[in-house]
Length: 313
Image (cartoon, rainbow, N blue to C red; front, side):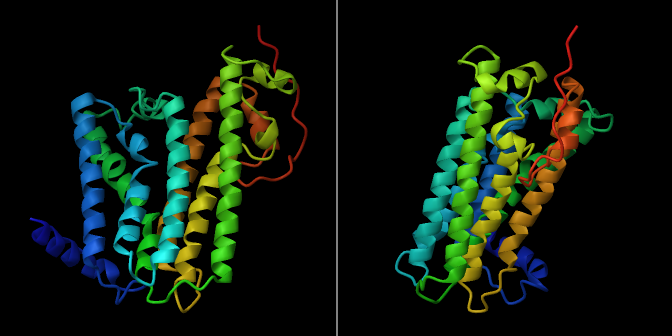
């Protein structure tokens, strides 16, 4: 069965590989990774049909890229690519463990569905059950899982490297940028977690955030520089991760096929950020002023001071 699956994958790859990927042959490890991705997508789809919830991809978001990188790292043992793949696996494990922890403490594995799926189902077009299932199959189950495979693509590029690890400038830049973005994401998630808990009376309130408790959302700390510093950090980490692919190539070109995943991730975040903010804007009347004053993603100095919170009746 695996041989037949491999033949199908290789046959499908031929038209895709033309152009920028011309000459890139799929090997047995690539086929195994594609099989893993197909299994994850099938689980998400079947789970949505059985349990009528659409957050299975959310639950696997911090897991599947780690599995893909680990697969390449395992098969890279004893090759010239071993050292770089080991470093990449270490970073992927660190990212995955922290994101899993953050998702779990918010109840992500306790059966809670992301509220945005419910909002999306209210869309006039997606309210149609047939259209929703087409969306479920194509975007929720398949596209998002393929995207999670593509952001791990730098490991596939590094795996193909015939050169032993010689620490290069691209490796250093990638590691420093990745680490900085990781620390920003950790700090932003911790600040948001503390704010939400203290707002609900589950933790002690922060004295300097008094006006934010009245607004209903956080505008201090890292959120004074960006409305979504954690989103910016997540995208930056995966762009930085692709730098290891560039370092493994003789050409030393940064713009490699490994950037396909991060670019698609950025596009996904653009859409999801707009959708999230549309929901938030309806819930909190002061959010528009925050949008006007604060950068959307890239951390930048605030454009103007925020007005006082709107007095509630």
